[in-house]
Amino acid sequence: MPTANVDLAYAIGLQPEEAIRYFESKGYTIGFNWHDVEARAHATAFTVAGVLKQDVLQDIHGALSDSLREGKTFDQFKRQLTPVLEQKGWMGNGLVADEDGVLQGKQLTPRRLKTIFETNMQVAYNAGRYEEQMANAEFRPIWERIAIMDTRTRPRHAALNGFTARYDDPVWQFMYPPDGYRCRCRVRARTEADVERLGLKVESSEGRIETVQQAWGPNETRQVQALRINGELYTPDAGFGHNPAQGNLAALGQRLMDKSAVATPRLASLAVNETLGNETLLKAVSNDVKKWVNQVAVQAKPSGAVRHVGAIEPQVLSALEQRGQAPASVVLSAVDTSVLAAPGPLWGELPALLRSAEATLLDGDNLVYAIRQGEQLYGVTATPAPNGLMVDVMHRGAALTADNLQALNKLPVLSGGINVP
Image 1: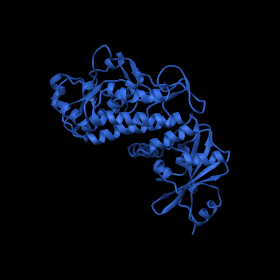
Image 2: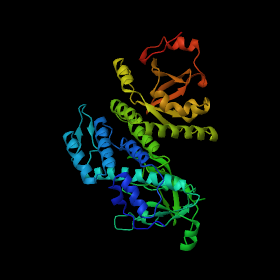
Image 3: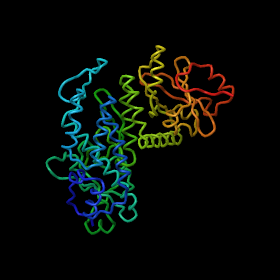
Image 4: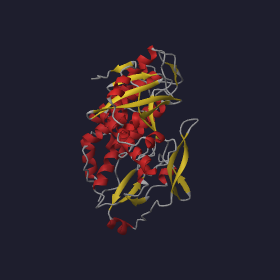
């Protein structure tokens, strides 16, 4: 049976295969491939919140990758990254202007560097733990949340220490740790015999999960799920209301595009397209969009909900700037009303298909993407909106005809091209 004295801080400092051996020495059976965890951590590193400058994203990504691959400590991680960030003006206090004169107020401090390091590593390892626990759920179907009960543990997380529910209880969709910055909690899988022997109380979230508004930035709120426990509502930190294995990368990708919707177009275009260039993260975002499209189709009650599917590529943005038609925001989003008006499989594939469009054309103020799926060409329009561009499939998702292609071929080309027979 796994022992309780697991030093997670020590485990995070180890090389991945050594960390697995450490957990196994404590009685855990680790069934996941550490290379998969490493890939997830690398993808996560691209989406460090608040840092949209392309060079800084690359610097942090490289340092985190080295730390995970080489088993570096936080001090080693900091020593590697700090001189680079100081040289670029991202360490210290106060505001600093970039080359375009834009004030950057979210500078990196040593404390924030440590938070980035610990959060990304914790997410990577807990995602692997989740996969192993799901694979073994038939034999260990009861999950117990464990907090490190010391003075560093926030009271709300300490209050959840010992919370026990079945592995398939919906509560684990948003309350599987880490569910906050610097969260050190974990989940222990139990057998039915453990529950009886230890007298554990297995709870159910039925009737106790509520949807609430949570602050998201200084002037915005988001709908999130919360658990009513001991008479109070528990909500994860903003941005953490998702399972680390099932939705972490997709949520981080959506969060980055949320921020990019109000960022300067050039920085947003670079950041989003570099991020979605990571195969692991693009796959996670695509799977999330597919699930959302399916949910919209089943509910059949449009509410104006949106999912981001990408951003205008830098070369297309440059072409628009040359024409004096640069948009205020470059993020591409799908709205549920459009999904219901033209249902079909294209919607779920848009994050990947838009990145590989054969051509991007300009039709007045709208963009038109010619995308290929199999042997067929399809059209997708992107119409300017206050916080980005809303995409819609052309001709209710039907493949483009020869006449359609002839008409598109008369439009100004921003990138690529269409070969019309």
